[in-house]
Structure formats: structure tokens, C-alpha cells
Image (cartoon, rainbow, N blue to C red; front, side, top):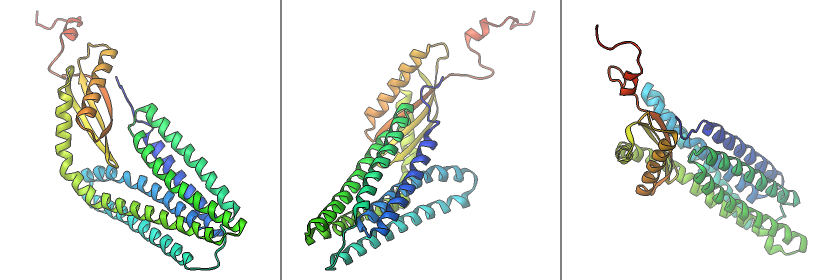
Length: 315
């Protein structure tokens, strides 16, 4: 009996990655033709979000390749570092362009189409978030808290860009030259957010993986020991933990008495989940799969012996 499943996790993740890259391309195109540094910075931030989500899948690939091919496992951190370097270079480029615009005297407003593009990006980003959050929460995949945190930071970036573009457009409309610099100031602030993202990405790609390897066995042992303390759980068949930022999502498979009811199994799973989340504050969610305990041959349970028609002893 399966209490919780995460079959749609890959679909939700890849949908978010593809949509974020498409949104980054759209905002980048509009920002380039409208000469809006802030919109270009927001496009880079969306691309960074997609790259971060793509890099989050690397630990799973790395674990799989370590079991089969050690040589391919060495190339995985290089990919993550490449993402980080590209993000850092893009953030520096946006910051340099914004500083150059601040030193000019004849600035132009990005235009009305830039404002429309920002509102369109708001709507698309909200739709992506609602899709990911609702599906993840419905399937109990444990990533809805991560989606909410990333969406909140993305809204900060988009709001800064919207404020800068609107003020710049207002300054051009009413003849206030001081407000024309707000687009470049917003781009400079967003570039700092992008540089922070790139820095965190490269730290998590290099040092985070080394630390993860050192504490993975210790954490798994603590998790297993905690789950085994729950009354009704016979064995812990499998336990995996996945890091999502500062939080951890645990996937565990346990065996219980095959003669108990489904409601009793659900109660056992709920108690195990609460115990893990209360004891380990960095655990954001726990997905538990409950299966009947099978002792295997030559051990048999009493109800199996009594239900057999053939005698068990020689006559």
C-alpha cells in the first residue's frame, strides 16, 4: 500500500525549467529592443532560476553515475560550475551596463511595451508557481515550500524592475530627467541579486556537495534510527534525502504488519512523519511509502500456514 507518491515530480520540475527559460528569452528580447537594462536583468534572473532548478537535478544524476561509472560522475560538478560562471558573468555585464547608463546625460525611457512585458511576465510566473505549488502539495512531493520561497524572491526582483521601468517611463512622460535613471538603478539592484544567485550556485555546486557527501551517511543513520522508534514499523526498507536549498525532503519506505488495516498504516506513517519533522527542523517534508512486511522464504506467517490446504508434515 502506497501512502504518498511523487510520480509527477519530474514533470513539474521540467515544466518549470522550460517555462522559466522561455520567460527569460521573452523578457530579454523585449529588454534588448527597448533598451531596458532592468528588464534585461530580470530576464537574467529568470534564466538563473531555471539554471538553479536544473543544477538541483545534478546530485541525483551524480548519485546514479557513481554506482555505475565513476568517470561520468566527475563531469557533473563541471556542468554546475559552468552554470555558475555564466550567471556571474551575466550579472557583471548587467551591472557594468547599468553603471555606464548612470554616467550618461541623455537617457531614454524604455517605453510602454516594456511595462506590458513585465505584467505579462508577472502573470506567466504566477501561473507557473500555482501549477508547481498545487501539484506538489497535492501529491505530497515536498517541494511546495521550495517553490514558495523561490517565487517570493522572484517577485522581489520583478517588483524592483517594474518600479524602475514605470518611474523611468513616468519621468520621460512628464519631463522629469531624474526619474530616467531609475531603470538603470533597478538594473543595478537586480544585478546584485543575480550575482548573489550565482555565488550561491557555485558554493552549493562545489562545497555543498563535499559537505553533503560527508554528512549524508550520518544524517541517513539518524533518520533511520528515528523512524524505527515509531511503534508499528518493523523495518526501514529504503530512505533517501534530497536537499532543496536549506531544507531537506525525505523519502522513506517502511514495512508494517501485513494484517493491519489501511487506516492503521496511515496512522503509523503520519506519526513517523511528525516525529521526523519535529526532531529535525531542517526537514521540510517527509514522503512515506508503507508496504506489508514480507519475511521471505523459509519464514512464513501464521495466517499463511493455516490457509494452506496441503499438509505441512509427511503422513
